Every structure is written in C-alpha cells, then in structure tokens.
Length: 357
Image (tube, rainbow, N blue to C red; front, side, top):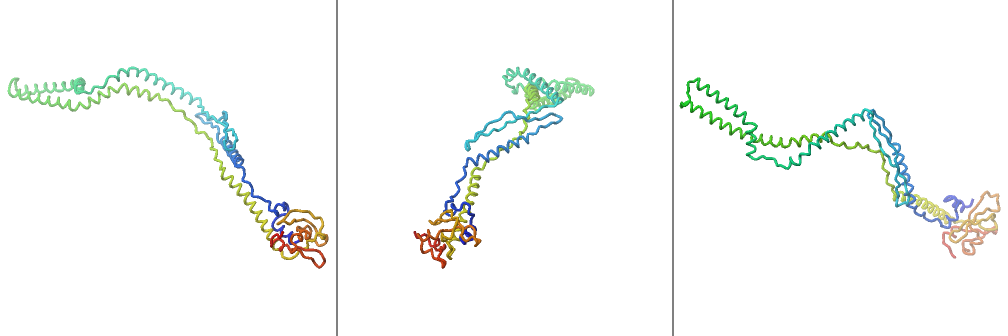
C-alpha cells in the first residue's frame, strides 16, 4: 500500500472520498424548528394523556364511589408547528352509598324546611325594621318602671310595714317626733334607692331593649344558618400538566451534534492533507505501470485515481494517487524519472508547495 493510500486510510474511509478530497462537505443546515418542536410536543402530549388515564383510578369506599370517565375531547391547535392535538376530557362522578344518600336526603329536607320557615318569618321585617329602635331616656325609664319598679315597690312596702311594727313595739306613736324622724329616714333611703335603681338598671335596660329588638332577626338568622346551601365537594382531577417543549434547546442540541460531526470530518480532511503534504520521497505514478484505473476525485486541481499496479505480486493492492503524465503538464518540477524509465511524483512538492498552474 502506498504512502498516499495509507495517509488517506488513516484519516478517512475511501467511501465518499471524492467529496472529502475536493472539500465539498458543507456545514449541516440547521434542523427545521417546527419539525423538532412538533416531535417533542407530540411526545409530551402523549405522555400527559397516558398519565391521565393511568392516574384517574376509580375508587370504591363504604361511603360511596368515585368514577372517572372520558367525556369528549378538545382539539388544540399549535400555531407554531401547525399541528392539531386531540386532548381528552374527563368527568369525575361521586356517588353516595344507599345509607349515605338517605342521610343526605333527610338533611336536605330539614334544611329546606328551615329555609322555608325563615322565609315566612322574615315577611314582617320590612315594617318592623322601618321603625327605629327607641333608646331615649324617657323610654328607658318607662322600661325600668314597667319591668323592675314593681319589685322595688314591693320590697320597700314590706320594709315600711316592718318599720311600723317595730315602732309600735317600741311604744312610739304616730305623730310623735320619734315616729316622724324614723319615717323621714325611711323616705330618704327609699328615694336614694330609687335613684340607684335608675342608675344601675339604665344600661341593662338599654341592652335588653336592643336584645328584644334583635330577637326576631336572630331567630331568622339561626334558621338560615341551619339551611345553608352546601358547596359541592369537587374532586381534584388527576390531570398531569403537559411540559413545555424546549424548542430552542432541541434545535441547538441537534444542530450542535451535526456541526460537531461536520467539524470532525473537516479535521479528518485536514489531517489527510497534512499527510499528503508530508510525503517528500517520489512515488511511482507512471500510468504505464497501473491498471484498473478509476477516477475518484480531485485535490488542488489534480485528478486523483484509484488503481492497482500491474506488478500484482507486490502485495500493495488498491492505491490512490495522481498520474505522472498529467502532473508533468502542470507541475513538471514535481515529476522525475526513475532508473527503470518510469515516472514518479514527489507528492510533498506537488501539494506542499502549492499549485503552479
């Protein structure tokens, strides 16, 4: 095997050699972003849909059941890729057991009765609330007189009766100075007690008046609180999110991989050329000494051929190189004649010194 062929084989396969040698290998074009995005998005959608089917497991408990069913679907159009994806929709259905359903029916019936009663009772509130609450001093005093003064009077009348008995037992007669002094003290104590009654009971009377005013409202409110509408107990659907497709990342990753492959090919080509330029000794390149000649490419304006030497016993096999007769027309300085009369080419001079056309 010739030095040229060995150099080519060391730095690249002979398959596609023509493009490698002639430098026709170009940088890969960037991949189509829409195709890349469509592929990734389709995979993400498929994974999410599969997880939804796997995760929405029907449940059966003593209190009831929870069932998931696909009820239709939604077509989602991706404006970037132009693809349409069919996304399934699920419905979660909760069903009570017979016992729990009976309890719920009774509870709802009771709540409906309370709500109806509250509605009936509230019909008088419009006129009732139209009258402002009266917390004037006169009304409060009247309330005290009405609700507390009777007990006060009864207590002090008993005290007067006790005083009469005590004075009589002491021999103090009506109209005497001692009698008048005792009843004067009694009257003053009763007047003071009456003033304290109004002072002590005034705040209580105001609160009671307000409480009586609010009593109908409180009753209706209590009825309504027992008839509140329960909010539906929605189940958290097990619908996984569809991850965002990293379009830019996928495009760059794909392009960088192709670019790395192209750069590797360029490095191989440069290494091959370096090997050719490093060949200083002449190599038999006479067309008369070759057979099965076949053009495979060009290098720096010189045709390259694949061939075998006619002396098949040399064990070299297929070779790659130039034809001396063609080279000497352009670069005679790179061609010399061997002692046997065959021409040889100095590859280092031919390629290392540049083209002398």
